[in-house]
Length: 199
Image (cartoon, rainbow, N blue to C red; front, side, top):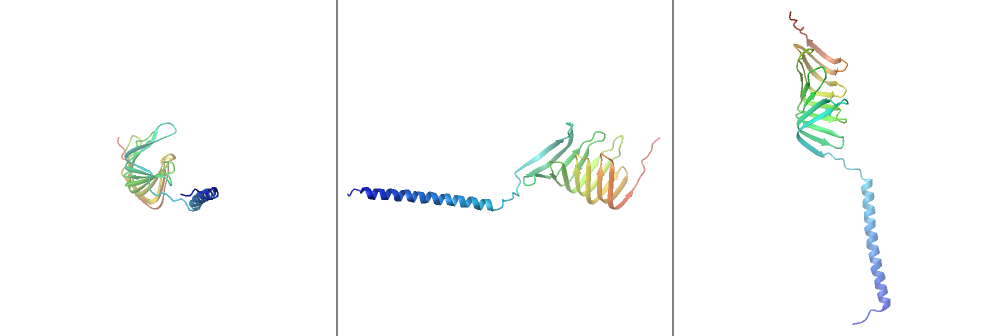
């Protein structure tokens, strides 16, 4: 067996070091190119919910510490891209100091804008029982936007309102319970029954 001469050994070491440096350089170049490609490509928009709950009960508090409304449903999904909640079979109880709780129902709802907007869709029905100061109230429509913090309800869709035995129909409703403002924009018709006065 021949012994490796010193010059050949040095060449072999230089060749191994050069090959290793070339391999590491290639690896670094691939990593840099991949990072540049990822940075230049648009971010993927997430369309799937990041969590969901079943049979939930969500309570939103007023600044005074009292319950402003509570919202229940069979399922709620949260979508992180717009921080919205999709709700199936929602039931919303809105609380007021001087009137009975108003119950709003629909087939589905979307809660947006930091839970300050509740969009109710499909077979929307609102019911407020009679009290000593107000008659039984009902509302029916296909879509309703509720702003519980402002005590406002509005919709561009046709609505049917029943107050006691009086009915009112129209489109483009705006109602502010805090100020008493109420409007219907078009196709307005109604039937008024004066309240019965007992002696």
